[in-house]
Image (cartoon, rainbow, N blue to C red; front, side, top):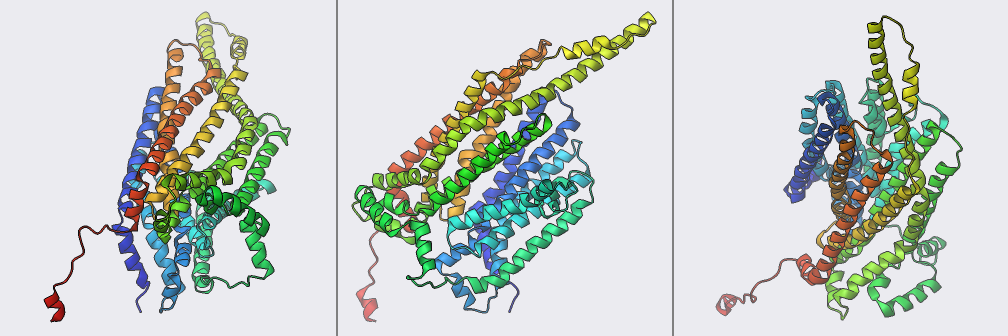
Length: 600
C-alpha cells in the first residue's frame, strides 16, 4: 500500500480551488499595501530609511504572526469534526487506511492555502531587508518562527477537531487551546517571577520574539515547540480511529439528562419556550433553542470584565507598574472583543450554512414561511443569545475605556515630554558650550535645567474622554450589527462554517481596519504638521480625540454600508441563492428516448 494514499487526492482538490489562488494573491497585495502605508507615514515624518526598514519589517512580521496563529482556527478546527457530522470518516476506516493517512492528508490539504499565503509575503520581507535596519540572521529566523507558528496553529486545530463533533465547540476549543499554547508559558514565568524564559520556551510567541535578538534560546524554544506540536499530531493519529464513533448514551441516564439540561434547559422551560416562540416565528425557536452558548458567553463576559477591573483598580501601583497593568488590561479588552466578534460571526452564519448543507433550506422554502420571517427569525435569535451579555460588555466599556485611555495617553505623553526635554537639553548645552568658548569662560548648565523643566504635558480633558468613550461604545455596537447581518449573507454563499467566519471577519473588520487606521494616521499627521512647521509644540491633548473621531466616523459609516448591503441581498436574493445552493439548474424539458431505441 502506498504511503498516504489520500494525500494526493486531497492536495489536487485543494490546489484546484479558487480560494487557494486568491488567498496567496491577497496576502501579497495586503503586504504590499501595508508596506506602502508605513513608508508613506514615515516619509511624512522625515524618518531615515534605516529606521523605516526596521519598523516596517517589525510591523509586517507581527501582522504575519497574528495571521498564521489564526489559520488553525479557520482551516483545521472543523476539518475532522465536519467529516464526523457527515458520517464519512467511518467509511474511510472501513478500508485499510490508518489514522496517520487521514490526519496527514487533512492537515496538508487544509494548510495549503495558509502556506501559500505565508510564502507570498516572503519576497516583501526580503525587499524590506535591503532597506537596512534588519540583518540576514533576523530575516531568516523570523521566517522560521512564522513557519513554526503556522505549523503549531494548524496542529492544534486538527487536534481539537479530532475530539469534537460540533463546529462551534471545535472553534471555541481551538481558540482556548491556542491561547494557552501561545500565552500560557510567558504567563507562568511572569507569575512565578522567572524572567529567563523557563516556561516561555513552550510558546511560539517566545520563539518569534527571540528571532529579533541574538539569543540562543531561539533554537531551544523552536525545538520545544516542534516537539509539542509533533506530539499532539502523533496523539491525534493514534486516537482518531478510536474516537470517531459517537458514544451511545441511554436516554434515561443522568449524564444524558445533564447534557440535555446544559444544552436546551429543563423540560419545563423547553416546553414554554417552544409554545411561545413557535407561535411567533418558528425559525426564531429553531435557531435560539440552544442555551449553552448563552451560559458560556455570560461566563466569558463576567470573567473578562472582572479581570479588567482587577487590573485597573485592584493594584495601587504608580508610575511604570500602573502603566504596564493598564496596557495589559487594554490587550485583554481587545482579546475579549475579538473572541466576541468571532463568536458573533459563527452564530450569524451557522444556521444558513447548516440549512443549506443538510437540505433543510429547500424544505423550508416549500412551507408557507416567508423569506422575511426566516431572516427576522435568525436576527432575533442572535439578539436572544447575545443581547444581554453584550449590553453588559458595552456598559463596562463606559467605565474601562476612560481609565485605559487616560493612563495610556499619560504614559505616551510623559515619554514624549522626556524626549523633548532631552532634545532641548542637548540643544541648550551645545549653545552654552559655544557661547562659553567664545567668551573664554566656563558656564554651568543651570539654564538648561530650567528650560527643560518648563516643558509641560497637557492633560486629557473630561470632554475628550467622554467623546472617546461614547465613540468606542458606538463603534463596538455597529461592529456587532454589521457582523451579524453580513455573516448571515455569507452563510448563504459559503459551504463551510469556518470559512464563512473568516470571510465575515476579514471583510467587516480586518480590511476596513487597515484602511481606516491609515486614514486616521494621515489625519493625525496633518494635525501635527502645521504646528511643527511653525516651530511650536502641538496640543497633544486633542491628538487622540482627532484620531478617534476620524476612525470612528469612518468605521460606523462602513458598518452601515455592510448592514444595508447584507439586508438588501438577504431580502431580495434569498430564494435565488438558495436555489443555486441546491445544485445545477436543469434547463429545458427532459429528453425522452426514442421508442424504437427502447424496443431494440
